[in-house]
Image 1 (tube, rainbow, N blue to C red):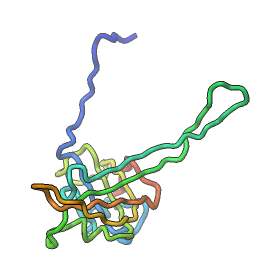
Image 2: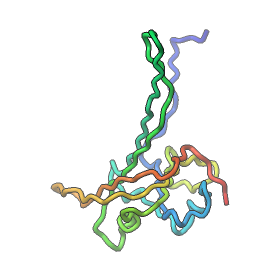
Image 3: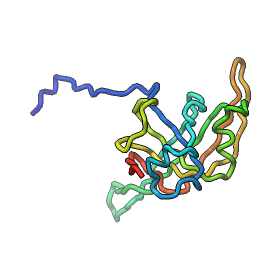
Length: 172
């Protein structure tokens, strides 16, 4: 048996500077799953720094299917359906430099590419793991201003296909 008195502390990655979020109109993605050429296409926009510090929200929950048996005191269970939820909170108001506001038109179909725990500046490679979201944009909600703040909008995103998690993309 291993010596339990020696703590094994795994390395970790700082979150600052290690997230890349890209978005493209769904119509611009010609194959599914997308390829690395889709990530690098001119129709794909970098939205990372258009978002507030709490501007990218992706959550996932799983239901439990219960399995009740006659006279058994415990309720058994199996994993059920998974629900993904996503939303953006972004800066807007400078029409010449806005990225998210003109791209995320209500009811439009979009693809979001999320790359986590790798340096933002690192060129996308076929070895990178991506989460890929095919979403429909919800209504835009203008957030109320705060003192010394910036104008922002919040927008819910609705998954329209299975969310692909930790996938590596083919080159082309």
